[in-house]
Length: 168
Ligand SMILES: [Ca+2]
Image (tube, rainbow, N blue to C red):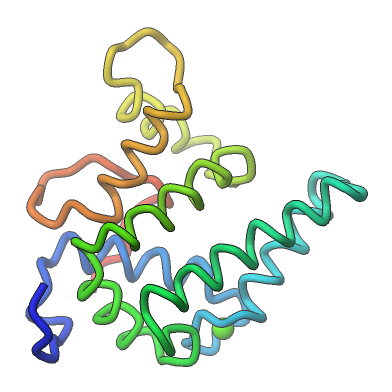
């Protein structure tokens, strides 16, 4: 990706819709910025909903902190920018191996914690179950997650990892 300043209108629409959907899903307090406080609230919710105690609860907190600092390493200042700049920043890292590794680590862990709408989970399951064996391996999940985050050319994608795509 070149270093020129991008705008949302320069980004493939399907990819922008996917990333905007993520940013809004993670902006827990709905102030238009996905921050450390938001991601730590997600950690709290995971811990409470699973009724986790130490050491499991500490592992969740560490997992979220690792993701937070990993994103900060890939995109310095990311967590203090408004949502539209976070989307544009994410676009600048779409082909970065460091970004890919951070996202892969996140999604592999998130596999255990994500709270998809059960009514939509079957569609995403079928999308991810590429060999139709009725099972989702960690690798299939990670492949679908990486496709979600990094594929910006498939306009007709059925990948709905975080639910229906926000339209704008
Ligand atoms: Ca927020």
